[in-house]
Length: 482
Ligand code: BES
Ligand code: ZN
Ligand code: ZN
Image (cartoon, rainbow, N blue to C red):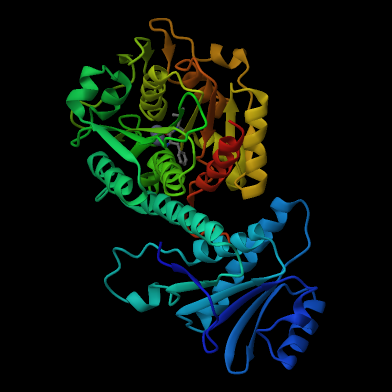
């Protein structure tokens, strides 16, 4: 996270200031002069929610909390208004900004901070020239302690650090982030956020007979890894663990079925987005000490032709013992996810989630505004995730897992093929995975939302981190009812 967040007890008269207030409290604002208030009132009359003024020599950006229902919609507007505020502060080259919220709820103040920090996020690790031009001037956000409690501030701060970690992992190219490096980065994150990590190397993966992961890895020069993340607090309210599985394809060329669509390979460093979301969720849960036993599983490799690459027509024996006829080496994610899903059975999990940039079909079906979700979990949990989607605005849309779709995966010579028909590509991928589960399970095809080619307010260009806030919100509720 490139914005240093800290809580302060008093405002500094000279520092650029971001004020979030209700319209009703505008006239009582201690931080503004009389003429400042008059200007603010006149501007908000014009239905402009976010605007700047120079008041007593100090740059002030204000957001008048918009009325909108339901709450999720309003919180999203606040993130977007905060994003507009960042653009204003940047244009003034502000470096340290202080934030004060009056007459709004903690959730509203937190949404503003989210919008601010996520908009100011940047990935400039590899920039060695024109640093200033490429880097945001805003380095710190100081939050006045009357805006939200210490606990809520710490929670927001940890969650944002986790989202930014997820984004950065997605943004890292293969030249840095190989499967082996991903496992090392997970170990570093474990130390930073406070969760345990075990990494299986290729020998162990062979011993476990993870045929899906090993086959995808055959074309690679780098060995595969299988990382296990664990957050196991003493006060866990769940009897059996929750397991999160993330697709960790650090680069997807398509393998020998080389990606056929022009330019579609350009951004395939994002194909470990599911792994990055899994890591972000465990990190947020651990840092915020959620009273839940959570396990993350990250199978990882790159997918490319070369070496002894697997070929269309191959038959693979999976970790579960099932056989798969490979029809297309670009449908690789489901192979390594299937191994991880079958590995998850030993935990007798209460609920399993998987996250994967799995299909272009999901992206074509819903565009960049939602996650394609499929579920065998009970309706209450499925609805709870959908509700978390509305509140965090990381929305999910449920696709069916009707048995007819399963028939599209029939093979004559093995138990299943790794490819469905011409239609319903996101669903047949989900059906493939379902085969390897025997517990309540939700599948999230995050291909639509993981990587943006153009910015959308606080969802800046490239890795978005979408999925972390969604599932953290769900888990927090789950921990209080589990
Ligand atoms: N990694 C891709 C899916 C993807 C597409 C991710 C767009 C992010 C953005 C996946 O491995 C893949 O190649 N899927 C194929 C499946 C097909 C061969 C059945 C696809 O979607 O075309
Ligand atoms: Zn692929
Ligand atoms: Zn892929």
